[in-house]
Image (tube, rainbow, N blue to C red; front, side, top):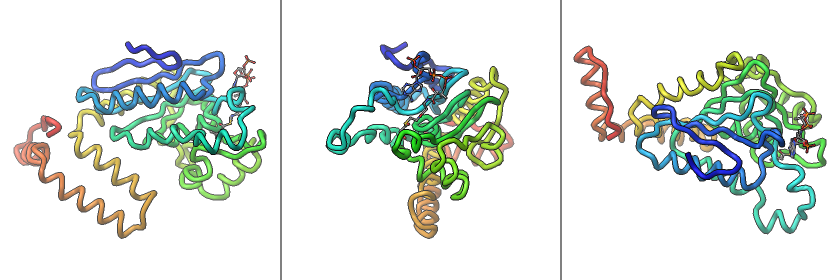
Length: 259
Ligand code: CAA
C-alpha cells in the first residue's frame, strides 16, 4: 500500500507485515532497503491501529546479508565519516514488538536483522550464519554482541571466526536463538498470529515489557530490576490496568483501550 521499492507492506488486523522484496539479490540489505524498512517500522510505530510488526523475506532468503556489491569499493574514510550501517540501528527505537519470520538464509546482516527483532520464528529450512570473516571483515550490525547473548560464547566464536558454521532451524531452536520452528508455508501466518495476540494486549504494558526486557541486555541487574518496578508501578496509571484487573475479578474478558 506504500511506495516502497525494496519492501512490501500490508496490514493483517492489528499487525503490520513487512516483506523484504529484493528476490534477485536474496534480499541483500542495500542501504535504501534499510532506509525503507526504518520508514515502514516508524510508520507502524506511529499508527494507533497497529500493535505489533512481522518482518519476513522470501522462502529462499530472509536476507543474505548487507549488500556486498554496494559496499565493496567503500573506503575506511567513507564508512567512518558516514557512519556506515549506523542507520540500521534506528529500528532499536521502535516501541512496538517486532517478530522476524525467517525462511531460508539469514546470513551476516540478515542474521543481525533477525536478532534486532524481539522474537524470531524459523521456517524448517532456515539457515543462520555470520560469514563476514570470509569477506575479510567482521559482523557490523550486532553479530559479535547479540549472537553471543543468544547462543553463548563458544558457538558464537565458532560461527563468526570460521564463517561457515551455520545453524539450521533445529540448532537455532535448541540454542535459544529462535523460539519456534514452523513448517515453511505456515511460518508467516504463525508469526502474524503471535503478533496478533501481542497486539490484543494493552499497548502501554506491551511496550514497557519490551523496553524492560531490553534493559536486561544494557544495564546491571539492580538497575534493570529498578526499571522493571518503575514500569510496573507506572502501569497503575493506565485505564487498562483497572480494566484488566477488574475483568479478572469479574470473571470476564478484558477490553483494552490502550489508555
Ligand atoms: N550482497 C549482494 N548480493 C548478494 C548477496 C549479498 N550479501 N547475497 C547474494 N547476492 C546475490 C548474488 O550475487 C546473486 O546475484 P547474481 O544473480 O547477479 O549473480 C544472487 O544474489 C543470487 O545469489 P547466489 O547465486 O549466490 O545464490 P546461491 O543459492 O548460489 O547462494 C548464498 C546463496 C549462500 C546465500 C550466497 O548468495 C552467499 O553466500 N551470499 C553472501 C552471504 C554473505 O556473505 N553475507 C554477509 C554479507 S556482509 C554483511 O552482512 C556485513 C554485516 O555484518 C552487516
